[in-house]
Image 1 (cartoon, helix red, strand yellow):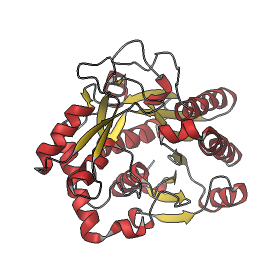
Image 2 (cartoon, helix red, strand yellow; image 1 turned 180 degrees about the horizontal axis):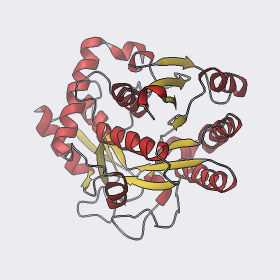
Image 3 (cartoon, rainbow, N blue to C red; image 1 turned 45 degrees about the horizontal axis):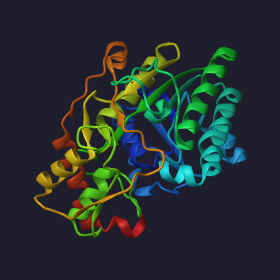
Image 4 (tube, one colour; image 1 turned 90 degrees about the horizontal axis):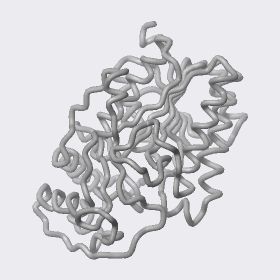
Length: 336
């Protein structure tokens, strides 16, 4: 099947990760339709295809889009992702992340879409007993965000057993960095990601960087995470799509490098990249944060031939830094 004859519906395609995948799909020759309510996404970030501004909760609009564009595959990114917020407001996460995913899968089944790529999360593991964590590890999420993603994975599994419907679930670890051409990247009025907050502190947009929790059972007391560059993750999505289009069975993959960095290590690398010794203060733990999350990702490398290109924390931060300077130059925060 020629890529130019394949239409892919991308929900949440105007957001940070979704827009990177839309760009990769467009560059690869696919026909792309982005479906996004722009609650956290941005129209300027959609570089290829058409943009439909609508909510997945609107079933009539969703079905009309399926009827009009007749996609052969769906990639689902539209979700709330802030762990502490999910603890404070769990129903917001179950409604948007889980209930709306059901709406989307129902539309797929109604219109005969058999190929589904799901944006999942390492948060489904909770606090893993073994590090690095494998896909076969028990799912034991410790926050509503992770639980909402685990619920969708269960739904996909059951639907794949009952219908001619196949999926790839990609469990992300910590996605970071920006487009290597500095065309798109993260823009948020209230950023929560460590690297983004560190860089904004270096630019003077945030007074000080807070380290949440310094008493974890890790070498330096701060959380350890596996950071993956957004473009490497985007390539994983394209490989997953090609796998499904070629008849692959439903499967789950971890997306990470297998190398963890502590919060303190990330902060020091950010200072090195920016050349700014920005202020850092210690604060208490955030609710819902596991001490360590590092991926065992040999499965996706073996089955899909995924070969990361940007497995270097310094490079990841450098691309994010170049993007932050673009944000200032282009005044994108004014339309965020």
